[in-house]
Image (cartoon, rainbow, N blue to C red):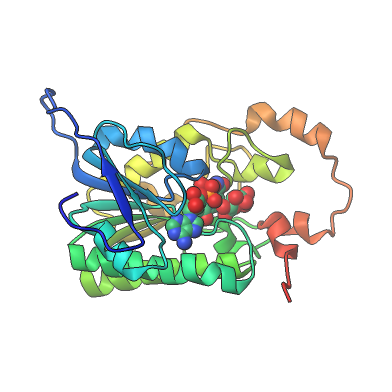
Length: 289
Ligand code: NAI
Ligand code: 15L
């Protein structure tokens, strides 16, 4: 870290040995927010080959810096901390924030104000590209009988989905106004294996997540591209053809789990909003007061 961090942010780093390979990695310094979370832990080791220095950040404990890493603990709601966090960063994979449905007051500081801080800090730092972890819940109120594209009008299924739609709007604004490119990943359900019947359509394997994030970071020109983050599932609600320039080709599928999941969860109430809408259980959460 070349810059002193403000109160509220703390840093440690481990120096990377000089690379002996012929081809330099595509990025000098890459930032991963939300690095202590489920997907952050998956991506942390997998992003390292793409950069000389991987800066990992979270509000939660991240452990010690591995070789070639810088560890910075910071709250996305703390603007000064996030401005310092983005300094000398070439590209960001922004996973940090509240990742499920909560009261608006909980979602606001991390997801809405926090994502604003990331873009403002990127503008100040000259960061050129953001890979933004959006969510399928931006469009959770489309039905499971529909096939939708990244261009449909958002139909968020809660405050969390609203916050992700806001993040996508920020991404569009910062591209149109400042030329910062973003790929907004409307991630389906990325877990070690698909969960429930809904997961047969929404599943994104960890290996496909890595493929998608790599494609989003390295595709030559992306402007602001929105893409659904799913594996090559047989049953699907999304048509990603408008994002083919990313070169993302999923290799995995939920199909090996189909028989087990269908047997474990027979379809009993076809009118339950949870099985009517793509957002599943999120469409029934709240109100919170
Ligand atoms: P997670 O909840 O495991 O990780 C989120 C991380 O953000 C946590 O480590 C948390 O400490 C950190 N965080 C929360 N508030 C913060 C704050 N104010 N400042 C700094 N860090 C803060 O979530 P997961 O599953 O790893 O998801 C990562 C991202 O991908 C999230 O943005 C989530 O909304 C999005 N996503 C994930 C999906 C999935 O299936 N895992 C599906 C759709 C979207
Ligand atoms: C999300 O946006 C959440 O971050 C994740 O925890 C899952 O709930 C996922 O959506 C889903 O829809 O399965």
